[in-house]
Length: 175
Image (cartoon, rainbow, N blue to C red; front, side, top):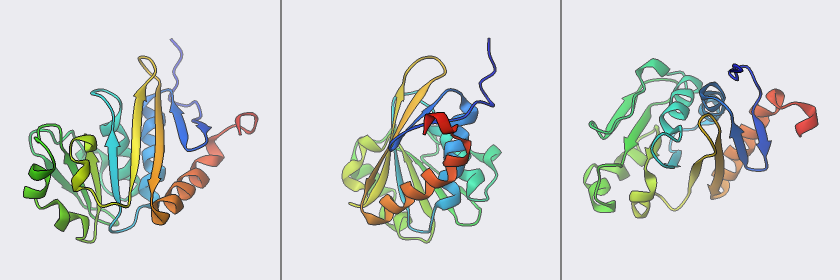
């Protein structure tokens, strides 16, 4: 079987096709390098789609230790220290937006860090109106499509920053 960890990521507009966990991590790293305090990232996709793998890359890009990142399902919120604080939510076990509000999510959203919310579709009404949605689709065992959906001008700018950061790893023939 071919080792795809060194292959490049293919861009498709505001979509990226990752053919390995290493590529998903690289997309996350590019995002993490561009994050600012107050950014909210909604991660949407089924179990095993690569959400936590991408968060490890975000942590690395934001100067936190990616080895500290795990799926926070039983903890609900994990915090990672880096260039900016990262707040990693897992809404899988929450019953809805009210549970997210009870966690004090609004305070985290305005606390000077960046928030990453896995299973965000369960608590969408609790998210700020402006945020970045990342929608994960499983193509096959190793391949994922990750669609960036910017909600607001700040997030359109963030998507452009990520595209610029990933451009050097995309072969010219695929641009």
